[in-house]
Length: 268
Image 1 (cartoon, helix red, strand yellow):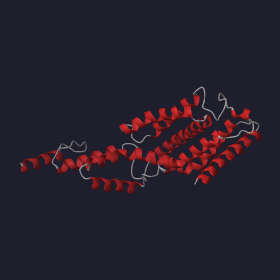
Image 2: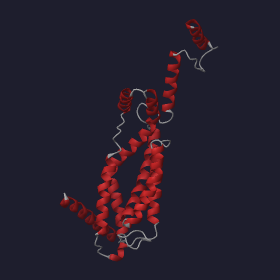
Image 3: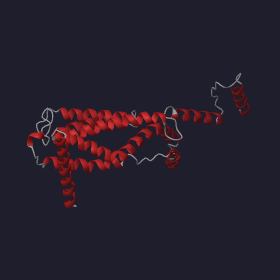
Image 4: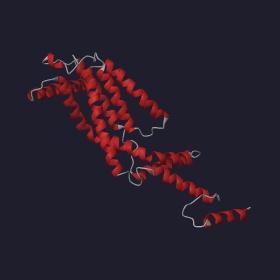
């Protein structure tokens, strides 16, 4: 296992050198630019997974009102609640595990990238600087990248949050950016540069998915007002069975409501 991990780290080191050679060929030899190229390459490789993750999160936003309605209706019967939830997932083609795999894949990449940068031997040490950063293997002394890492993490979470009213998700949206920013002050600035670039690309991808999702919402549900319509219909249905008068703009002359009142008098 140790030899396999060393092989992965060595592969990342070779990838950095390869991308650096590309920057040298185009006349802008720099390791920071090489890391930008690596970020784009990793994003392309992970695109199918991240695309699935982002679509899953967007679909969950659409399903959230209906899921809340199921939780309210079957709060006393957990088995029924679970069955109705799975039925909804099946009807809409939603996979609740669709957003997990990309997160698991990203962790080994970050760890291997970090260790590769720490032990990295630069062919031209002068090219290890990038913009205001004196050395990509050391933390950013001006804290610009840590701030950008926190800001981009916050914005990415904001546009992809499933339920902004949920206290847990709100807490994560506030705590996670600060945690990432703090970590970026300790790690190699090359890794922070990778994180910021990956976040920026992910934000653009999420904005595109959100735009496309408005034109093609999840099967079986509208992207706006789906939960409210379903809840309203269920309330009316339950009200009729209990002889509760529900105002309806389609009734003419109050005939429908009068019938309900007569039924109520007969029963009393």
